Image (tube, rainbow, N blue to C red):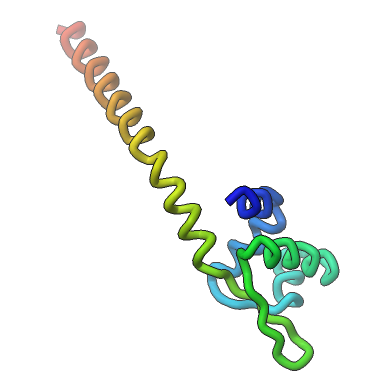
Length: 109
């Protein structure tokens, strides 16, 4: 998981992942959409590939990249373990805000 998060921490790589969310793309398409040159895009794609986030398919002289679902499922499972903490905090905040509103209504009488 640490490798996955490290790979996603760089903004260009995160943008590449966001582009690939809509479907497979070639290195050239990724480079063009992000305003990178092809060697830069290839370097970022190599990091994403080494982290297991993307897979590549060679077709003639083109390399087509697509996302792998497994690492994102792992991130989702990891985040689920924190959701209950945030839900509890939001519930307490909601109760606090309702108390404040109640006090304002009573104060206005």
